[in-house]
Image 1 (cartoon, helix red, strand yellow):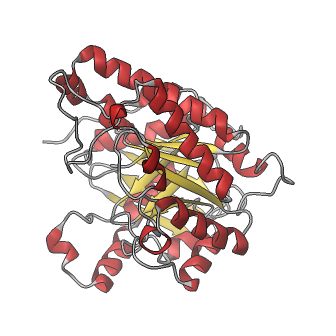
Image 2 (cartoon, one colour):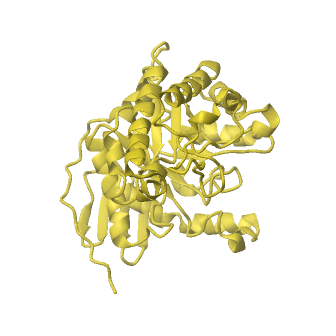
Length: 384
């Protein structure tokens, strides 16, 4: 049965660049303001989010990132096996990327609600900061990893200092804070009670604002994130500059109404002076064991064949400062360090907002015409 799709009111295109784009242009306060990696709308604005846990990035991989990615977020355990900790691994890669391209923006990953191992900072973490339920049992992520308790001021202070410390030791430009939806989900209240769950969320909100204040001007905080109409309240949190839409058109959020809602979030973020990252998927992901058993060349070929639909969706809704990520996972082997022809083409500024007719939309750019139909999951990008 077709899904009814509500066509939202058209939001006038605004040339006002939101806070994130201003941060890209401003750079660090202590330095001469560098320009963005490339001009607004020149090409598809990419956000690359990954980690390489075993071994160093190759010179070719570093060169690729420096030349093609305005923003790079380095995941948990990145370089930890080689450098001894996630902090050291991220710092080493950040230095190499900045040496190649001083204008690139590199983000430090730290989970806000899961105590992933691999960080040197955990040597100073205190057990009493671990979240517990009413019976005193440790609350854990499904992987078994304990969760911290952001309702505790001492933990918030420690966490914000870990973030600030990483920036003192490396040429970093901000933070990617993960797992906020796991705290905002009703499931947490079922585990710890409604009052404690509210305290955890309030603590997270304070913790991000604290981290932002310690990072200082010119640095950004990106959080994960929003899902369709869920968790949009994060856009109003102090200290949050941008959100990732991680499950875009995937993970059970692939109906036309879901996709339309995620696209609307880009405009909602821009209206608040913030930005959003759309994380596109090629129709499979790293959790699919059958697919992961196939040759990597086959996976990459399929990803290149499937990029048009998520990219076209992004383009019909993109605002100044919006970013697009694409891969089938979050490691160096999942397709983010590979060239896609669409990402190297000239795009140019949009002529205006998209024109919607039901679930179908078109939008014109200086060097591309975009069409997408959410119902049929078809799309076309004509490059001029």
